[in-house]
Image (cartoon, rainbow, N blue to C red; front, side):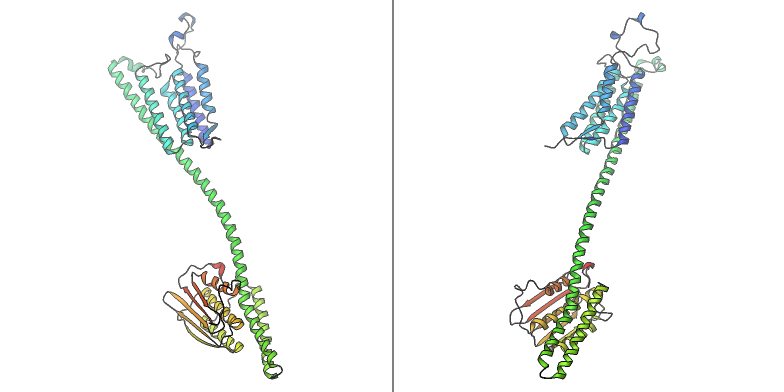
Length: 439
């Protein structure tokens, strides 16, 4: 069961319009109040009056009905269809009482029915609005029929008399004119009722659109904050990958050179000095990489070179540092986007670093080829390998996978202990890149 909720009138302008309509009804009903003859004082006690009908009978009831109808607009029920229907029925009943007690239905009733219809449009969906609209229109037609047939439940005529000019024509012709007049009034009221319902429906639709837009804006602000936090986290991961791939590679190579110095210092002093000079140079490169990472977080490691040239230089440096032979085949015809070139370079750099640190391989094979729809990369070695299921904490492997997957690519790693390692990568050429994973 829905919870009943009384709310203020949602549209101040419409509420003022309702008050204006009730004011029009008030002026119309009290401009000439018809009183049953049996309630009138003896003729000799009445002062001559051009209406010959003083306002003394039913006035309190009319005023109370109008007051209640006006106060009902201050709070409208929402949530309970039964209470909403009861609210509308009471408004319709009060409208009938006002015209039955005061008459002047053709002037008073339309304004009262429009007030009821406006409130129904605010409370009900379109199905309920149509039902209330039909009932209000039937009420108006019923009032018109009672006026034509001179039905007076309280002795008060619902319609006004015919103009003096029409009283001189034949009764049949006057009756036809009266019916024609009532028919035109019914058509006009129907058109006004439809216009008012459409107008209120448009206002409600605009209000609901504004409320939905406000909710959407709030959600957008929340999503923006969430994306900002997520972008911050992703940028931190990117910086971590950048430092790991650049500085980590240089420090690993330096560590290898220092180990060579330790092995050669007592055997071949000249060779040990060469390794020491190389270690010193790698230390400078690592320091420079740290400075570059601090100075610009989006530094391009290719530094204006093509991916082919950058990979060749990386392979030559790897061979000089480790002594491991690299068999490479790089086939790239077109110029790749900087983001894809950087990602592929970092992946190869990290893979070679892993080989130098853990693989103890005798040879490494690298194939980079440009296909019609994608770039394929294969890197394989004959090192000692490892179990991928047990190596779940390495940041390097996770960083490689993240770099590839951010371009919608495929990353596959196959390795077993004493069986080497094989990495296969495919990156589509036409992808929507996530800018938070650049570098």
